[in-house]
Length: 192
Image (cartoon, rainbow, N blue to C red; front, side, top):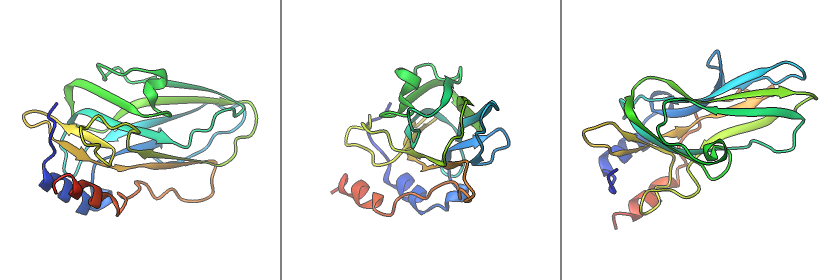
């Protein structure tokens, strides 16, 4: 993995419209980010990588999912896809500090990185799940975003807009969530 990021790629991503940029989304089987979990009805949703925009494929991804409460009346199973060659920790760190996924193959199409199966045995309240940067970025100066590493030959790091999902909500989820406006200042400081 390279230890430098190319400024034009970051600028291009930060200025890109979220609907056309790459993302990691949290979706149901139908691709919708509004999810329903009912008591005694099995539910399945996915953490899906969606290359596009500034990235035509990836071999590495680094991010985390926030908002998954503990102690709810349910059985929750998180299954990583078979694609990552390396993925460690409880649920690969998906709901904790974050995940780091490596793959020898270049993933160039929407791909389910995780399958999340839920069986609730009582009503579940409204939950908001969202994709954020890893708590401890592997990038040497702390890349302030969730990111992919592009496929060969350059393996450059590309930030992506994190997706958002709403569980048992009447609100629309408006996914993906835009990159925070304050992010550019932190990236710019790396080059000063």
